[in-house]
Image 1 (cartoon, rainbow, N blue to C red):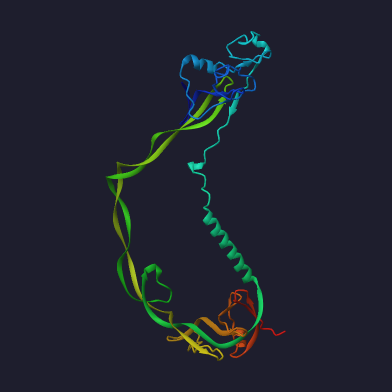
Image 2 (image 1 turned 120 degrees about the vertical axis):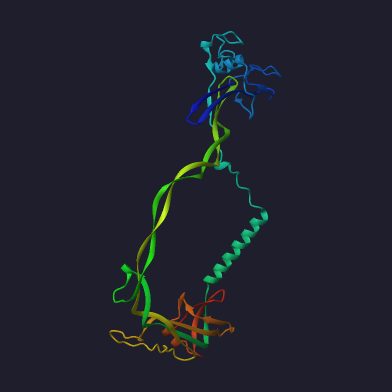
Length: 373
């Protein structure tokens, strides 16, 4: 039999089930309601503990259900016999119930299920553990080698450089724009009436199909929410009947506002204007010589005249090829300490020059000692 009560959407269900106890004399499993062991006849004493099994049989008989709900058994202090709550005298020696004490009623908490019903993580296979350990050891060795500092000498074999300048030229250009967006100083050439945009104007209603999602109940999940040891060989098990849902896509017919597009006209202006326009950048490069900037043919007139050129962003790139004197290992150097080579550093690293340097345990170039001790 079950008792139900509504708690918002979740129903609480209570079931009364049969428990068991183990005979301390012969270790036989006995029904919880039995006062003596079915196997050896030993009395169910005060120290006997009740237990319940998964999927224990639910008590449905009305008479047995009344006994389960009657309350805990009581223990006679004279003979140690256990008697039902309904018995005013000890079923063993006849002593009055007032001389006995009730068995304890205990609440048993249920461990919560893992979130989302996830299974516990599986242990990592032994082969994978070994592989991860070897990888970690190799990484530690590489880190240790990279942190080592080894002094040595570096000889410059060759150098190369590239310098470039972005440029702009002052030109007359023809453009078009809407009347309110024409820049100052522009000279109008022509104008035309054109559609600039469309306004959406309400134009009645129409019936259309509309898709929507709906949460539909598919059933209930029975989730245990604790047990109560009733102290008489039975247990009350509490469940939450948690609703389960799924998303269903449906279609319905709805009225929807219609719109018509109404053009909005404006004046489109074609005009000439003088402005700076990006042109091809100039580049210079060389090797084993002093870097120079290319001729940008820039002029410094104010105000600028048609055809004038001005300089934009300048860029420079320096590269040095060198070898370690001890073993001849070669290096292409374009950065030091994570920064591009500067002009000052490049000018020091002349072809044939030798420099004290610091190398890592992996052979990388860490530092060049530009300052002689």
